[in-house]
Image (cartoon, rainbow, N blue to C red):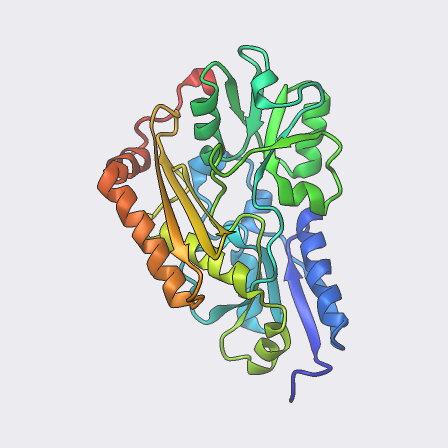
Length: 322
């Protein structure tokens, strides 16, 4: 069977953002003549109520979807790329990565225009240890609190006054058209994004050549280079859910500028490394080598000790930040 006019089933989580992502990819595939349906699946992460750093995130948002993919119940899975492990398990492959949306983190507040205008001891919410650590480094006086829930839930908590501000991914707010309280965006130098942030991943079975051919047209080569570098760095650092690690690669002049950080969870120390990457070679092997290179330089600067302490539960934020 050729890839033209295929009947494709997309698996997705049920959150509003996941549904948007699945519908977005479905629309692109329908525009190319395919018939597309969407299957909604509930994942372990959707059912969890504990903070991510207490239970881990590996496979939380992908396990049930991949089980359906392996069983042939769906042909395509659409994920936020940052939810996927850096090494894909057999028999799955990332078949395509469309052009990335804004990878930056957003400062969101009803009353305040930026992080610098927050009053002393203001309460800021975020679910990410990476963001928590960088917020504490930028403003050690803030009360940085763990928060859970989908985008709408978090915005409601902000509106209800439980937080003075929250930090969310710009891409999610834009996709859901919920930018009414988006006041400013952090530069990657202020708050280094998560590896793959803002990008979608289209996952398929490795042996399903017809589906692989159908979705290949959605791949965006510059985005794939950038996120491959980011994920290679993350993999080399072996950063898990207990470790604040950020990696970001962006087009710069005739090449790329990569930034990576490893931080103490309490924000008391952030190791940061930058790398300029020549743009003449856009192969994935080149991206992987560059990503591993920036990670190894961070390890030489002392990241290994931070990683070990963080994974052991040391250097965690105190109860005042809980």
